[in-house]
Length: 108
Image 1 (spheres, rainbow, N blue to C red):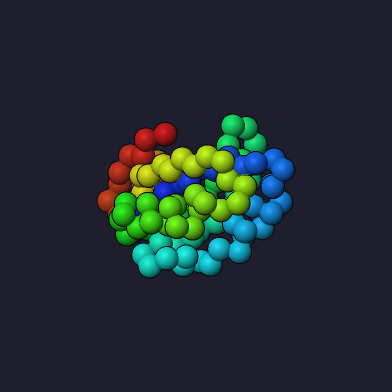
Image 2 (tube, rainbow, N blue to C red; image 1 turned 60 degrees about the vertical axis):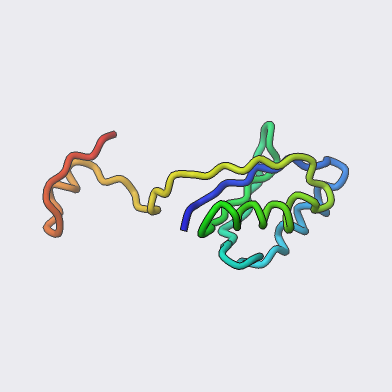
């Protein structure tokens, strides 16, 4: 599954209502989309929503049906991200000492 970040701008007058609605979304809001988590952002955008989806069509369906018309959301920007596998980058010393793999240099 691919990872996506959906950035949202919220109407300040409906902030708490909108945050409540976002928090009530199910972990699988539509077929093929898994909601990872919501996060508050300080700056130009107000909220970030991380999701995993099988393809772009499912992301568009999620944004159009579940997010875009939610009360209090004024702007939506969807960013497909590069899958990083959620594994920490190992330092060169850790790689050399690993018995399971061949030594490989990690770029810092």
